[in-house]
Length: 284
Image: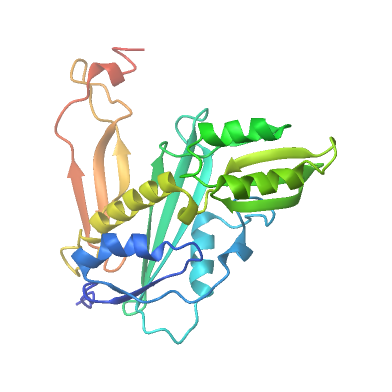
């Protein structure tokens, strides 16, 4: 008989972050799962890569999240370890739109169990624009919700960052950075962009909260046999028949949930028919 999963409720949790994500995540998980969030020690997650580009981001989002947790000290009392990694890139289904893809990874040391979820969102304030004059940079900042949205000013030459000013949240700080930028010659690119770090980016905070809420729902779906959380469909079979001609479409016909802990499997077969608009025979 498979060992029952130790409940996730009433645990001590810690977030591997440098950018104040712990308080945001605590508001999502504390009330329902009763997690007590321990203070995050000083760790430098920037060494794994930065949005501003002066340190390359070479790891995958999942690898980066695990690496962040590895930076935490070993003497913590936490049994739940959480890390987040965000990526701003082309939307996987709509390539001409930039998406904020957030990953949250959870490791449970009592059960030696891990899980992660992704959320893709197009509501974000990511931008990066080149400018030549101070007035132009100020206008770009104003058009992109400054000062609520902090900005970054950087200097590039031959594609390499020469100098960067981060976390600019006041007009005085922005002007000071721009005065320094004026000293660089015309061969340098002058760039203003959104500060994408969570503590400086209100829209990313919203997306991160949505990701956490999605994760919370997934953690409350349990395997009927061993009670492992996140018992979700992990395999799909396409071929839902068209309601007009009965031919298979590319819509999902079956969803299979397979527990990684005990192997218990449930297959859900969809009994409804597909709209003919999705049929290659009726709507080629």
